[in-house]
Structures are given as C-alpha cells and as structure tokens.
Image 1 (cartoon, helix red, strand yellow):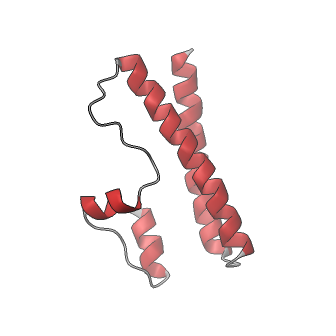
Image 2: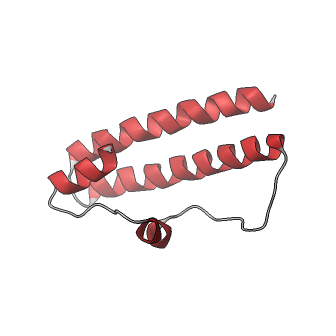
Length: 94
C-alpha cells in the first residue's frame, strides 16, 4: 500500500497487524452499535471528515517542522481522495 511504501522509503517501519493498526488509529470505534444503512453512510462520512482534519494537521507538521515536501505532496493526494469521497457521501445523503 502507498502509505507503507512511503514509510519504508523514509526508513520507517510499516504497520502489519490489526493490533498495530488499532493502537495507532485516530478514528473512534463504536462497538455494539448497529446503524441503519443511512447511519452507516453517515458514519463513513464522519470518518472521512475526521481523516481530512488529521491530514491537514499532518500536512502542516510535514511542511513546518520537517520541511518534507515529498511527504507533504503525498498527504495532499491522500487528503484530496478523502475530500472527494466525503463529497460523494454528502451527495448521497441529500
């Protein structure tokens, strides 16, 4: 995956197990909740919007603290994909 490749290209390690992903996630789980189909779409939209906010913060960190324009461009591309998906989900919910 692109994120793992970017991490490895910078000398980092990529996450490989579900427990590692859960340890580092910024999204909130909702155990025991069984939403309607409309509720699932709303939850997806909420998660995409949270991811967009997180990526904006990470973009600032890459540019200002690390001067890493390559990762900044990579994160911008990810953010644009999440923005497009959020837009499509919003359109679906109307």
